[in-house]
Length: 116
Image (cartoon, rainbow, N blue to C red; front, side, top):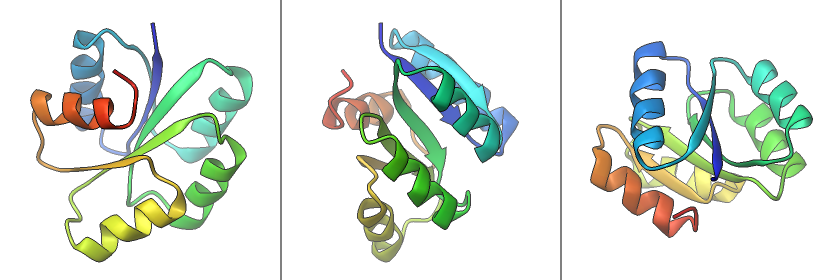
């Protein structure tokens, strides 16, 4: 079973995403801040992916992506401009999910990232 960390600052969205991921067979951790997420990543080397909001500080997020090259980082954002998507991919994101999304889109993006 693959393990995913959900790092969002919106608790309702965090729990919706957690439920969707569990329905797809993932084990899921949830965190609402970057420090807690980094602590978990440092403790658990079995995390396969992190789904995070693009609005969480870009510079620390880039450092996090570089520090854990074995983890797939997937941005989840309501920012839909091509430049926003390109910035996320340039930072090292494996995929980019635009809000709103549904179960099928999530499944497709996880598959494209090699997680399904």
